[in-house]
Length: 72
Image (tube, rainbow, N blue to C red):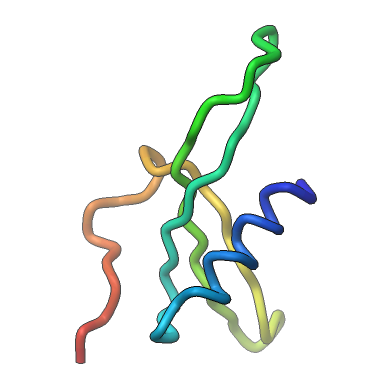
């Protein structure tokens, strides 16, 4: 988890705009394989009245195609 958050932090530090949807690469090893592979993750920042700040992380294939950065 520490490596995923570090990759997200590095992506945020190089981003020129602030958007609630972030795509970033990370090296992950999925058992039983011990060799890390490059995976693309998505982070979606959101919140509601119960939780002011929340961040959802998911694999690229788990994100719906209707979710995209707002260009307005």
